Image (cartoon, rainbow, N blue to C red; front, side, top):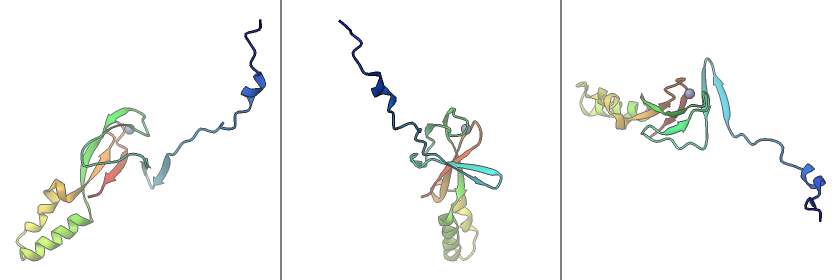
Length: 114
Ligand SMILES: [Zn+2]
């Protein structure tokens, strides 16, 4: 009776030795922007693991004007004949893009475009 009947040579042929990492790290000047393709960003904060500091975080939202905001400003400015209403889109959350930031290391994770 020999319970160890397996062949040890079978365990030596492992073709997949390289880890699969799909993280793209791009450096733009002094600000590091790490984009993960698999993260679906929305207008609300999401709970995720920060790709830089690896902490479990809830993203902080920063409203940034988008092209649509500037277009809306121009559109309202024409309609209101320059009464100053054109700045309204810059105060409306629904007219702006949401930038997701890690509150731990302040990494810009991504921007949700409307
Ligand atoms: Zn972080």
